[in-house]
Image (cartoon, rainbow, N blue to C red):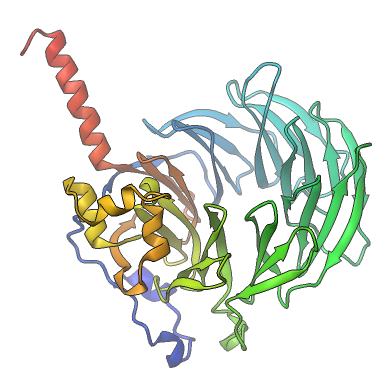
Length: 433
């Protein structure tokens, strides 16, 4: 175990929480393809957010008040978006149906929303009418209107004019996240509370209902289907809600003592994603779990996957790997060794059974027993907690952390194939057979 892992491990946990040992990777990692690294140097503070633009570009934001557009194929800085005077808290891609160019909205604690042209880096609009720190942004409908959340909930037109604003009472906490529902409704989270609003035909924001609160602050909101959404909180609880009745009908991961020793909340949900409009994959404390929203069952639960809490997770290579990034600074790759071996060797073994399944390799996770989940790779380069992970198709994984780094982990198998094609093309042009 590295010294950094020891420092970030959890000695304050009682023995019964640590019954399951943390897996350790061997030095030789034959099933880890993400071994070619590009270090993207441009930020000078904690990098917190990553956003994919397309297969070749992504955007990062940091506490240095900057957003940087990167070429992730070659590691080039394309554009620096400079103008905010405080850290950027949220990014949102905006459609532009007139010029067909990609625009980006950034919200900041400087009480501004800025609209950028990602091709040129020009700031097209500066919005200040909401007059409070911006905590989240949400695209509403297909016309390009969007909402901003903070002290108030505001609705903006595609041309960036303020259409409506709903003012919360002074006792309410800032809106920190929100998701879309059917019938022009929005669910917002502020501290422990969930509130549903509706956008009327006259573009007004009206309160629909205040939902029963969680015991602790809400960490994530996730759209599952048009009929279901999920909320997850610091206490570890994941609730499923019916969008018609606005009632909670199922709960995952309930624990009796969510605070744990010294109020460390060892079971907190730090990250949550939905797969195939049915399964929820959550980073719970130092482990991860997969839940079936239709059957109400826990499909698998891997405890103590890291030496400290998991901050982010994502699936890679069409579901072949699950990548987890944690406070211990490590990025770990999880899969079934037999399936990975078959995919790498091109064998018609167990992998072929999943490749022809309805959901491809993701099907492996829905049917695999936890005993078969293996640590197949570990990516170590960050000197501090990993803040976010970004899947860039099959070619690369992008990560960022408190060390101010953005790192592109390239798939060596694809890179070798590309180099082989370039070499073959060069030989052909030189007349070498």
